[in-house]
Image (tube, rainbow, N blue to C red):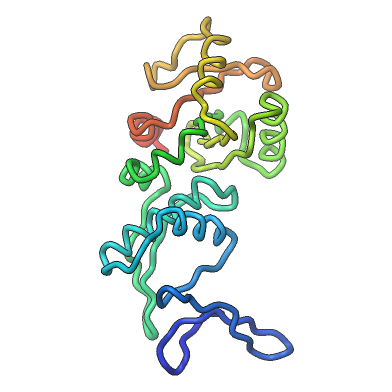
Length: 227
C-alpha cells in the first residue's frame, strides 16, 4: 500500500496481521519505487546519476527509466505508462507502446543495447504462451551457451512477436556469425537491408528474422510490421 504521512511525504507501507509498517522512504526525493522491475529502475537511476529536476525533466527521466526496465526485465513490456499521483487524483502523464517509446528516446538508451539483438518469431506459428517462452529461453541457451543471458518480449504483433535477446558481450561478432551462416537466405522484403533471416535447427529451419537494434530498425518494426 502507498500513502502520505502527516508532513506530506509519500511512503510504501506493508500491511499485515502485525499492523502497518513503513517500508520505504526516499532519501533523495519525495518518491519511491516498488514492483517486479524496481531493481532495474534503481539500476538506471544510479547509472545515470539523476539529480533533482523540474517536472518536465523528471517526466522524461521516469519515462526512460521505465523504458529501460521494460527492455531488460522479462516481467515488463507492453506499454510505458507514467502517472502523476496526488492525494486526491491520478493523472496519466505519458503512455506509449515500448517500441514507440524506444524510438522516441533511442539516443538515451542506445548504449545499453550494444549487447542485444532483435529476433522476430511468426506470431501465428509460435503463439506467445508460457510454454513457448520457456522453450525459446532453452533454445537460445543451447545455441549460445556461453553468451546468452535472457530474452524479453517487447510486443506481440499481428505478424511477428518481437523479442529483444540479451547477451553478455557486444553482439557485433555474434551478428556477423549468424549472418554468414545464413547467407543463402534472402533478406526479408519487408525490412530490406535492416534485418537478416536465420533458420534455427530447433525450429526445423523456419525463417526467423534477426537484426541489430538500430533506431532505423525500431522505426521499421513500428510502421512495417504493424506492431
